[in-house]
Image 1 (cartoon, rainbow, N blue to C red):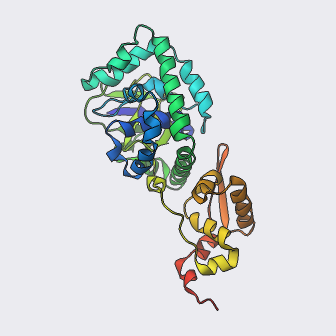
Image 2 (image 1 turned 60 degrees about the vertical axis):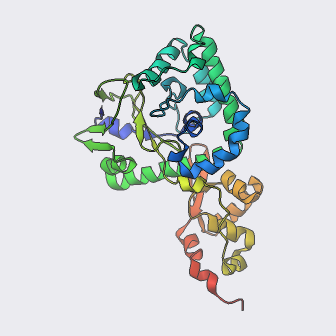
Length: 338
């Protein structure tokens, strides 16, 4: 097990973030025999396969250990802000000390009694070149497969998860937060414990936070909870995000006839979709309209007190207000046309 010791100040400083680079790297699990763990994502990634196979997919898939789908720590540095720009994350990755590359790869595969893939060991003589090649391959994968349509929707899921966890912490305290994230997390006597099974690169460890700030990051590609493979890394826990089912492709729900007569078809449909929080970009993707058109309708609905909005970093998410939710109740759609 791994134990994080948090004093009162450490617990108060614990925070959340998401990372598009982390999601880029962890999504490689979808191509290495682990897609069954994430059924809500399989159809979407199946659509991406032709684009993925045009990339250096052998190099990309070599980064994931087969037994426990570990990935090297140096590819997923702890986010510096709550909602980092992936261009800055790629710049940080490219600035990594090449000396950590070989150690990071060995730490990923050897504890699992897996050899480091030949595609990686063949380049060990020039770790700086290998690091650059990995960054190039990941950046091309991001741009070709994830950024265009998948990321706006995934980001909305991650932001919604962080909003939910913040409410749990405010209403139920630290124990409710940590146990709600995973049954493998326990909180007692200022100690947060991650229970683990199977091999690990280091023995059971107690890690004092000591003002370094514990960071919690949700992921679409984690089905439990994990931390960095190196006990010397900055304290960082990755856990499975809620609401992955919303990423499965599906038509927008129909609005009732009564609601359409009240608001107009477009605004009624938009309001009906917002039982779960979503961003302007995600709504535009699902409705196949421009973000500007969605923004105009959202402004009108918000002025009518039918929507609430919350901000996470640079991004704003909308959802029903109590009044908007009441208008979308199914019984309102069963009236006559008179």
